[in-house]
Amino acid sequence: MLSIIPDLESRGTFTPDEISMMQVIYLSVCAERRVALDDHATREAIAHAILREVELGNWDVTAITEVARAAKRPAS
Image (cartoon, rainbow, N blue to C red; front, side, top):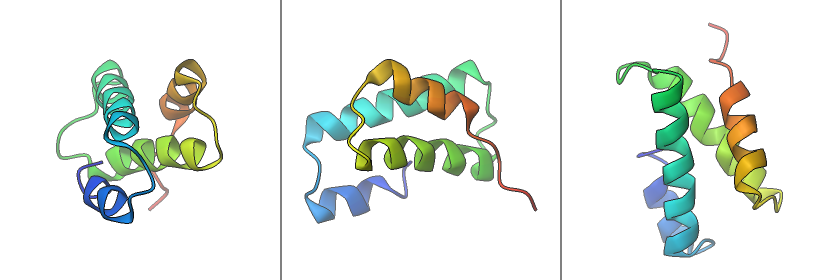
């Protein structure tokens, strides 16, 4: 999410409150799933799942959280 935030801010597509909401969902899902800090692939998958939902117009926090919980690490 840290790599995505500057891009979102520079695009000006989302308000600071919307970006904060995405960050809170991201942090809570990572903590809930106990994703290691160095597990960048899983963390990125979670961040992209959140962003994908929001870009589709879904602002339901519960629904976004469920999608983020189900995000899988990309196959390597």
